[in-house]
Length: 423
Ligand SMILES: [Zn+2]
Image 1 (cartoon, rainbow, N blue to C red):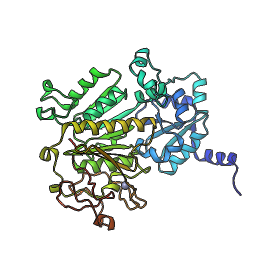
Image 2: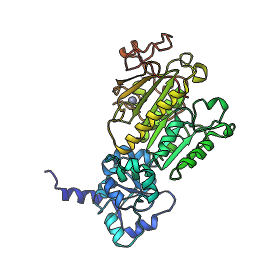
Image 3: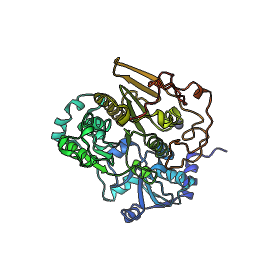
Image 4: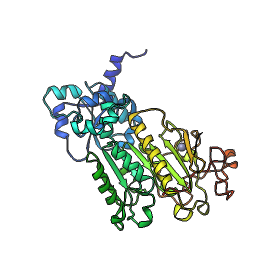
């Protein structure tokens, strides 16, 4: 017999540890304790238990392992009234979390008992003025602006693409910008990397970026990472952000970021440039293809010259980085039709934009139907964690705008190659 919803709840309750708000409060701030809010976004906006992570119930299974990687962590879950959190706790136990509790009576009882909570901030009059042109757009409005202020974007690189993207995202009021780059400013960067200037030559790029952004918009907190992104830190860093803007310039890092993105559920706005051409796409895990679906393996290194070797038109970085900025804002606000499953290709010489469909690869070793557990590891030049044989599509792979005639697996028309480098 099919159980009634009441019976279902009673059954779930019998499997789940429930604690009172007082017991939950006593656990707050203790090492290793994670508080998780599983309410919908509009409920979350009305008020929260300070420090709580927020994953709406419907996204729980998809996002929790990325956000709370330690399955032995003590997880305290709440919803509005203590029912959804019981089901959420049951789900977490089923996927291997060992120490989960649901708060009896949820946020409503927490609040009724006079415990500490906070509401998301409202705009100040200075902010209303600064962002007035955004607020005038009904699709953005004050609510959208607030959302941008609460958003966290990680920029991979403070170079040619990262510079315009960071400037526009900072101007737009994206509240937290993480910037990872281990280089120092060089005079040869200034042809395109507009975050920096001649007085900053020799200074770490992340520090230069932080100063430029601080002067542009005091609302923005810049989190500098003057380090190399590697297998040892990529998951931890990505997990702190809503979105990644990728301006990296090498294949191993792109595959590393892709696999970490699929693992954590954090989308990547990809951009790349080569001489006079640029490409932009958005890789939103499981909603569209990932980078590895589009480019299962990188071209041989000798056919993928860096921009230091091949050159790049500086202004092109401004176009492509700005396109990444637009896609980032669209993703953060849920606006329009982001480039999920599409590759936008821009040719500066004949001023054409073209888009190509990119499909998910059911055999993708990262996000495919039968992909194994994602292993985050340093990649060599082959970037392949799994052995893979080239399929029929790969036979007609790109021929390369540099006329090198190389062939590699690419699921877009022949006249488009994966851009090899960024700035
Ligand atoms: Zn994939």
